[in-house]
Length: 88
Image 1 (cartoon, rainbow, N blue to C red):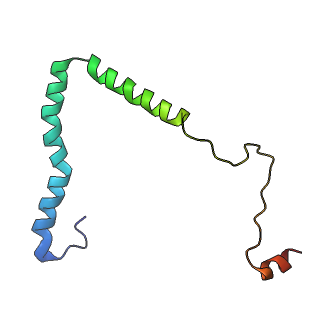
Image 2 (cartoon, rainbow, N blue to C red):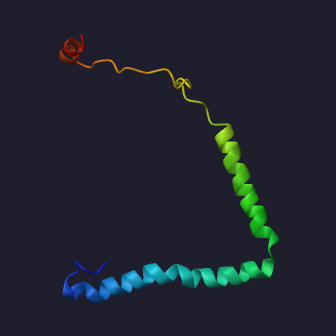
Image 3 (cartoon, rainbow, N blue to C red):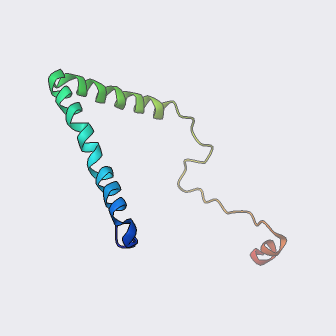
């Protein structure tokens, strides 16, 4: 991260890099301790709800109009008359 940093900016870049790397850990420690106090069931319920919502989202997504047959080969149509002459 600091290989191309000018010498005058090294301190700022190092401080920002440390904040970006260790800031989420400082936030996760109290959240983790609160989760321990809740027990093991709420994270499983949340994970199950997320999985169910994802499955329902995929199930209700409209299907594409492309053919599902793998044996169907689609040939692109030429976009210019010169390309059409080359194909013939």
